[in-house]
Length: 329
Image 1 (cartoon, rainbow, N blue to C red):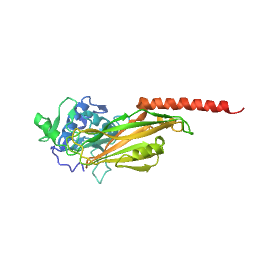
Image 2: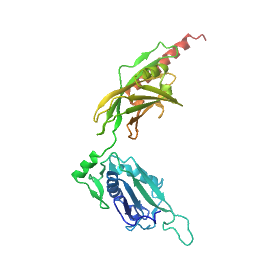
Image 3: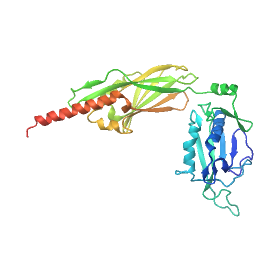
Image 4: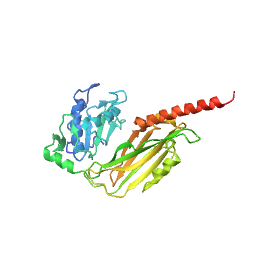
């Protein structure tokens, strides 16, 4: 497939020799700065492919070692590429083309232990992306060239999808401290989510999934959530997914309080709050035909949650001590 490539660079195809990335087994110092301009240009335009390990005529020059970094060259490229532009690139693929076995008298032009790397970049909905030299680039006449003001304005206007997102999760009201439950002390906490349209397109239909760890939600909390208009519940192992549809179009720049949720701290789930996954609220936002936008918030970061955990711990310890004193020896 590499041999069959059109042997010319154009707006969707760029060749870079192995020395663009590595001199022997040493990564070229200017590599990040150089690839930043290429990534910016493809992402700001109609996308395309950047080939590392092909000369200017599209011929394989032997390839790049596959183990320039500890986890492998491909994994390293996947880690580096997003941060070469601002905002970070979210959608791209890195393909590693290794030597093929000999076919008859033909042998692979890629050296053993080396590969040609193909970076496939789609047109970005987050464009324009700034390279790390603080310029914006675009593919023009087969070259990555700095964008003028008019080009930047065109890219800003081309967004097709709304950008609906949960922008904040805030505590709402005072925690409900309860020592009347025979199962032990508990605290019910309320949070409120804020929904915003961060893009330039009207969002006609918006829906949000709030994903809560099952141990943090009791029946009362679940019922409160379901009382909010347009909310439905889907249960999965270990988690509860509450979906709410917003029936009114969300205008560009509009921000609103969207949904409240309730979680409970008690002696039975107190330890789970400190686990990396157990105390995390996650969400997915759907707006028209835009890709879902995901996010998460570790609830333990809120002071109200930490106070509730401390209160439950102290009250549980006191209750246990009281039972111990009341038990005959």
